[in-house]
Amino acid sequence: MKRLQKQKASGEVKRDVGSIVKFGSYEQDNNRDNGTEEIEWIVLAKHEGFLLLISKHCLDNMVYNSSDIHNSTWADSEIKKWLNSNFLIEAFNVEERKRIVPNEYKISGGWDLQVGKMENMTAMDILVRAGAGELELVTLLPCLAINGTSLTPLIKTVELTPYAAEKCKNMYWWSRLAIDESEMVCAIGENGIYEEKAVDDSCLIRPIIWVSEDFWDEG
Image (cartoon, rainbow, N blue to C red; front, side):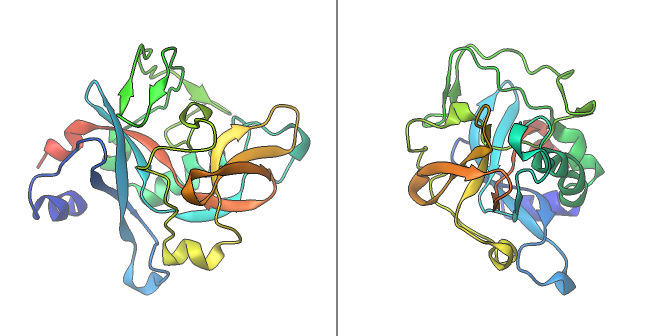
């Protein structure tokens, strides 16, 4: 596993909340001739041997949904399907995909991103499925992480890779929160300010994943 060995060569991998870890790779410098680049992730939280990660940079740009825009939901959105198929396969090798666990955001006690604590969290249900029976391994920021009009300083700043910037039409990145009975979705902009964007708008993408912490202990 060359990616992991490369990161470990520079010393022990820190995994505290707010730390940066490398996991997977994706086109970022907009030069496909030199291959893909390692993805940097911000550690948002730790829970029972798992890390909640959000990409440090906006990695790509696409619409939330272009079909059935009047009744769009996260479960049937194009962006969810893309994240859990095309992106999942392109960004992570087989061993990395084995370390990603399905997402569960039913948190009864609330989610404090500021200090990285999750209280009264239900057990991550490995049987949780999304859409047409596929596991939901990659997601976007859930509505529970949005507090008023601001987000934790850990993820307020919008940083784009050159690849994403080339495709960018605005400086907003998608959350997974589709507004009920509307054609709108919450998107987050600079300084953590969010606004509603039409589901067929094109916005940036910052994936979120749960990864088993033992990935960085191997090898």
